[in-house]
Image (spheres, rainbow, N blue to C red):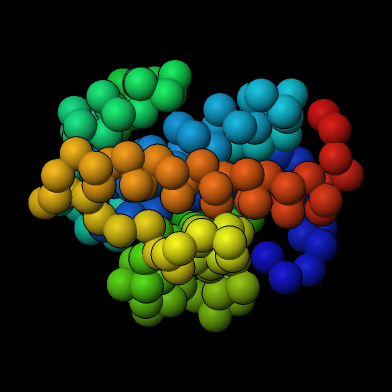
Length: 169
């Protein structure tokens, strides 16, 4: 979001990856924990979805759950869903994990809501990566890298949004 969003609270944030079982549920869980730790839980609705419906109804990948749990983040209650047409109007911010996800969202998004689309790593300019890479076909360290990147971007996103909503809860 490049300018102050006049939308009423709570702010609605949707984290988006391809299948909604690795990156976006991790981002949802990490950002929710950051918001709660800041005492702002009542000021946000945080959800996640996939650009594709490959895993609708499934819980996050067990590896994502395991690595997140080691950092105190519980993803077990989440279930995968696909981005719905109504999400573009219903959320203040739709956050893509990589450029392919962003391109798919741009393709589907009505023009009046395109300003809500952003890459997650835009909130972590100090990070070594401009995207959150998909760990699905890789080794365990990929899930750790996702968590590292998501934690950085979550801190940046929270700072950005706190400035817009006036700080404390």
